[in-house]
Length: 89
Image (cartoon, rainbow, N blue to C red; front, side):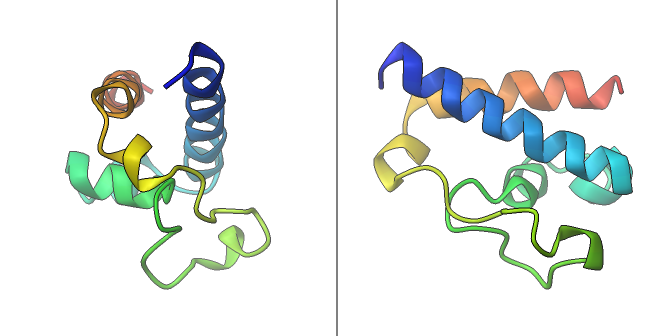
């Protein structure tokens, strides 16, 4: 994964997190701190997998990363870092 692509993914993940935290809490988004649910709520791979809350409609929570990117260590590092910062918000 290129540096540029990692930056794109990080920026899109942060955009989605900011949308969540504007309309909800970290606990609601992550179902009380589940990193798997946090990742799923961002919807970067496969889009948002649950029924969309009203505020999410039209906010582009569509598929953003490829399967190869999703399965990479670089992606895991992006999500791990973002998860750690989100806990403190």
